[in-house]
Length: 396
Image 1 (cartoon, rainbow, N blue to C red):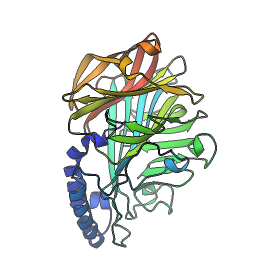
Image 2: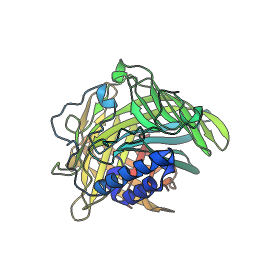
Image 3: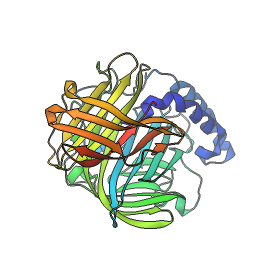
Image 4: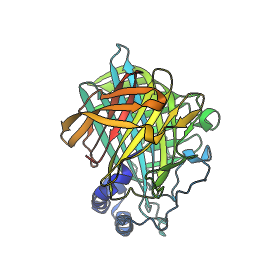
């Protein structure tokens, strides 16, 4: 579950300014830049509306196909590749990190222009590194079109990656500048998604990870059709891999630290926005010490009860949805941050799963103070079972 559907109306004016402002996103010369700006202006005026006419629809009963569904779905308005990880250093210090790449279609159709700089695809990427007493985050934007040459550092895969951002190929490759996911096989477990590497580099932090999983992919919702309201009129296609082994290194305070642990990958795509009556959501990815994983989110409604969805999952590929009338989720503590006041401790009761869990932020100040503010960071789990996980909070 990700923030882009809820916060699109807030970010659309910013995108318009960036696109119309020029070189930050387009990375091209003045003549082509003007042409791209005119196209992006028309596209932005259309996408800022709430209607989804012309985009592909999320429909129940459409079976997910692998490995094809690891790749972009450009006929849908938005999608994301999203990884969170709970790790420890060699000295035993806990930390978390996240990387997300969003693809946003500014119009249902590709531009008619034959210019290599013309595109209707926009990419945004977020990353963060969270320790108990520090939290660093970063954001990048790029248009999915030809970028001006900026040296080898801008295109780490070489001449074949002439665009500043994108996702393509089997093995899968997802990149924005020098942030990049690279799968290393076109077939095998997880339909070739793993093993993979992930590299993110910023001035203040960086990470280089090796990722592997032999577990089956977990299909969320009803065979991949994930409802975002009770009526099912807002939905996404959604699958996960909650059982990923991680090793690698992170750069923190100018020092490289060896790390290991576990990660969780989510993939979603859709064309619908959340309704105006939905205030925000709270999303949890829990990894329990019995070896199971639990995904849970609630969409908070202004006038109705929150809408819940969740699933308990196991490494052998099995799993079952949570009984929605069996879920009790209540706030225990709040944290004021620069971008808002967030609930950073929760009590989760799932009697049908024999679970009574207290969920607490490792670092309550893990607010993502980016162009779209939200809270996201690692959590600890105590109660009838223990474990670690990740939490995302929006709309506060």
